[in-house]
Length: 635
Image 1 (cartoon, helix red, strand yellow):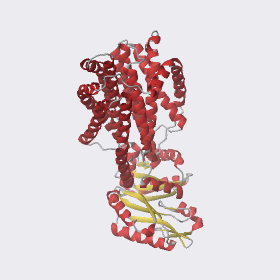
Image 2 (cartoon, rainbow, N blue to C red):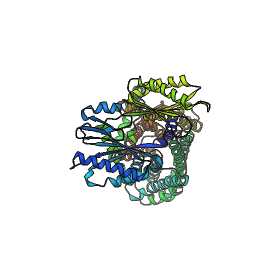
Image 3 (cartoon, rainbow, N blue to C red):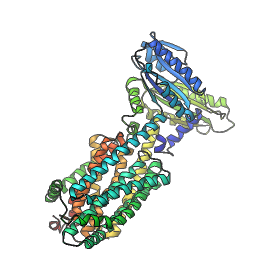
Image 4 (cartoon, one colour):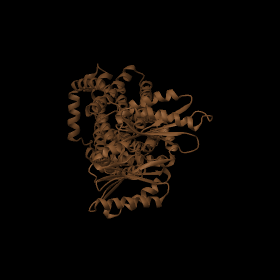
């Protein structure tokens, strides 16, 4: 999971170097909760597992803790302590071991090479079928990967059909005939096929980031389908014939659709320079899919509109929800604009208070076996954070004894620090004379302070030795910083491209300023919402700004074209389609709350808020900023 987020993060590179120095060995945790058997029988089961693992592969080592007959047995360490002295025993233990406070759960620590972890996981799960074992859960990176893949498949099967069905149902209610669904249905199917085809052709892996290309392309395609349907229905209701209605629709909608699609595609393509591989792949995938989908929809639009208009010779059916929303927002344009501006100012102030914090658990599917095991691990066991340092001689002339002495000095320094336990020195894998210094931190919050001491140590031994260190907390903090800086650069690039195109198209500083202000409002309101809810600024929440910008500018460009032609916005087909598509898309995004992934739910909720705020800003603030003198005309 971590290596999908970043492949060039310095802390991740250090972690990989240290992993290699440990012989490519990683740790798996097996959590057992036996039932209907005695503690002695549990003891025998653990011993049988140790024997079975040794037969499975000599490279697999098992260490565990078990409470038996009032004694605490630390497998592989030849130590026994009374159960009441559990914490004292753990503080002296030099390996990651764990036991529940009441002795009812046992944590088995299994060390194995990465190359055989998948086969080892299968072996452990087959072994866990013994009914006497009760509950057996396994914490391992490969287990999480399998659960994430299964969760993504379940989301695709559930969410995509549900979202498309709800959107098509709303279109059916709005336009009053099933033929109105021809173009949106084609847009949905074509967009989905294009995204998955490009995924396959480019060899891009489907993960929580790259899969976002599908809703991006679907939103743009369905929103513009609404524009086509609304304009053609308005044209035919004005008394024109089929040919004229379709011709007018293509001329009036194709240009802004092309500009908005290309602008969004180019902005997303700028992610191709991003340092983080999945974000880079997402940008290129979404950009290519938008362009291909535009071509396909434009080719299908004339035929689909003819089919729709032949059975829709009456004006388009406006729902009560639409009329209430439209009438209310235009009748109260001035106070709504003032409220939006005020909320944006408050949100801007709140944006500086956002906390940058990562939580790896948001990438875990809620109901996955790994997630349930992780919750048990947090709730029932004493958890320590491992810290590993690799001391490597700077030159071949340096003897192993000198490196060992330097490692000993580093060990002594770490022992003196508060919050550091179980410091040990061992030879690194290979013949390069390097040594590993391992320790356990009692609290993640101590990581940053201890990292400062290690940096000072590195400066002291610089020139003679190279010091590399890593911990899980440092890796995730590094990913956060890298992701946020990369997304900030991409957002800046997107802003320059999108609004640069608007400036070139309309050649008006007033138009440019109005579009900038109108689109800043929803983005700022999202900042305020993130602060109000108490969510941190991380990879997921930061990504909302980049994706939302490319989506909300679509309606802005359609409204700018409407204003450029001198047409009234109130009661127009653009107003109808903007409101309808926004309500439709917000409902579709809210369906994503059924997802098993916290990231998907969080991303969809903030995107829906952004779209709702964007339509309010585009229909109230944007017209006022475009032409204050003709405000009465647009009411």
